Image (cartoon, rainbow, N blue to C red; front, side, top):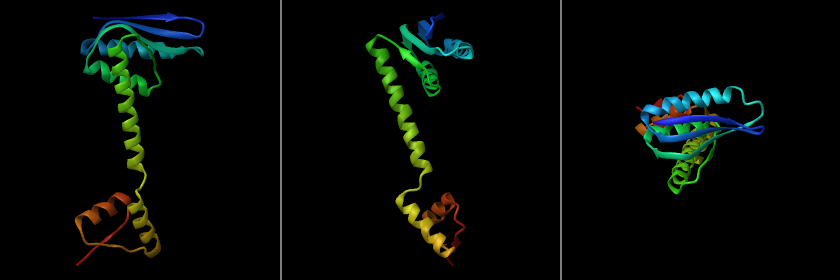
Length: 143
């Protein structure tokens, strides 16, 4: 079971969670988050995890979503802090992978420069054809 309480002060709104953050209760946290976010009036929103006794996979997933939406967390336990640190690392890794995926590597930049200079490339291997497709270069196939 999960109990969600909302405690407002002048500078912040706290979502105080008590109990287990597992599959059946994840939807309750999502709806409480949306409702609490609706009318903050310049207050900070903090998710208080000090009284959470268990965080399942679905709980980790929703905490990760809240992190990506800018949530701040308050917690005491070593395990809860560890879970939050792991989720932070995962989100940073995903962000860096996304950045890496959108920026051409040095080799790809060289290929783009060749194409821009000559406006013609002949791709003789499946790898080269895949790379050209990824970069949006119209490449000719070799004989």
